[in-house]
Length: 127
Image: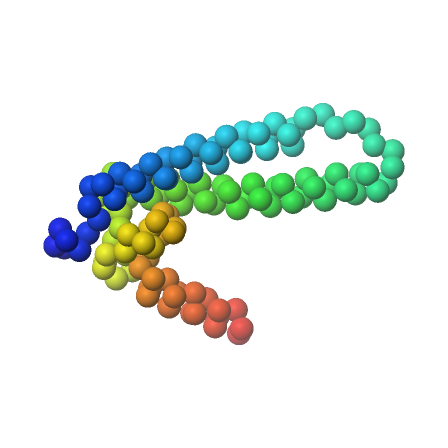
């Protein structure tokens, strides 16, 4: 691919800094969530308090699962940077625009391929 079609070194450095910061923040949040979830709970006698506590715990676990998946995507993006494959669509091999990567640094597909994949996914859910 021609150099002018690919990300500049400065753009890659900017995106790497974003990914590194995002990863560090998510790992810290994960540590805090694990500590919060594993703390000994006081014996709650009120059934409403128990229900609220369990609801909050379930919500925290759902968020933690989403964050876990995003951590995997961030690590994958950083690995693609190391391998020199970052910024190239995994589906069609075309460059992913800098604007798209700034909006979603973990993007592994160009906007056209991602749109097509989402449309196929929606159609599959209908059936």
